[in-house]
Length: 217
Image (cartoon, rainbow, N blue to C red; front, top):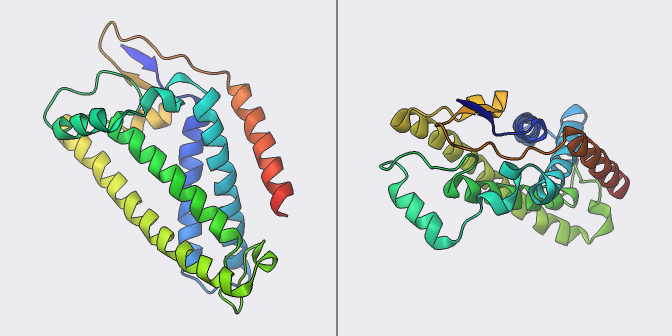
């Protein structure tokens, strides 16, 4: 039978984040003036708003989106990792312990990356929206960390894609489809998770986006 496992807000967050991260990464390797500078700044600020929304949604959103649903302790996560490709599919709907850990790591790195980007500068053509508010030498130091985290995130995205492929090949499990449709096939007796009102997700994001824009610009 099919049940709904991902709410619209979480799915939209995921795919908009994919697009914005691609734009941000591409513009990072271009000469940062004119349109590429604008793309890099605004995609980064938008990612920051998305990350803040996702953290809040992880506290008050749908059951499968809540941190309390998918984050597990070190032992449980390690036990799952040891048998991840050998045992039966994870019994609960939503993220498995490894997936939950990757979500947390991604959110932490994206938060650090976008905040550092606000203060980054190349000391020539490009500066983040808040770079002028700190010492120029310190801003250049933050820029170096910003670049390191950026490459780290690109590597993690690659690992994420490989994990999805491996999961599909070894377990014949489609992880991409449910993140598009919101539904997945489950065994009889598996209860559907509680899905939050989409209006709550919309209002929350509007408030976060307004606060981020006001605080930065």
